[in-house]
Every structure is written in structure tokens, then in C-alpha cells.
Length: 80
Image 1 (tube, rainbow, N blue to C red):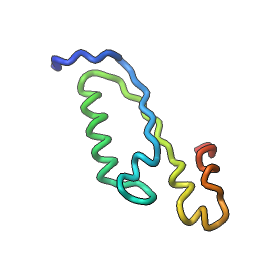
Image 2: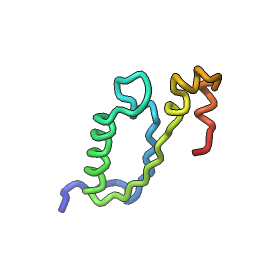
Image 3: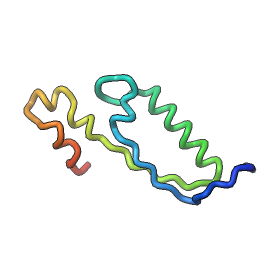
């Protein structure tokens, strides 16, 4: 049982794809994802229901897509 009383019972957390890149120039950094997951787990342990929305624009805007002619901003508006 936790001594911390969370202010909210449910939260929606939006993670940008760029936040998951860590120090890389593109893609997803496994160490960064693991660190974020540990933080989300800690919040859940407090009894908070967590819903996640994960952006993927950086995946669509990768070097290969840009090389094929996709504009960087297109990834921001693509439904996944």
C-alpha cells in the first residue's frame, strides 16, 4: 500500500515518437522505452489507471521515407 495519494485515478499519457528516440537521430531507443515503461509502471503501482497514446511520426519521417519524397510533416497527420 502506497503512502502517496495520487491526485487523479486515471490519466492519458501521450508520448511523442521523438521522446522515444532518446539520443538517436531516428527510430526508437530501447533504453529510453524501458525507462519510460518503468516510470509508467511506478505510476500504476500507485493505483492510477494509465492509458497511453504513442506517436509514430518519426518512424514515418525516417530517412528512407524522406528519400522517397515524403514530406516530414506528413507523418504528423497520418492515421495509424
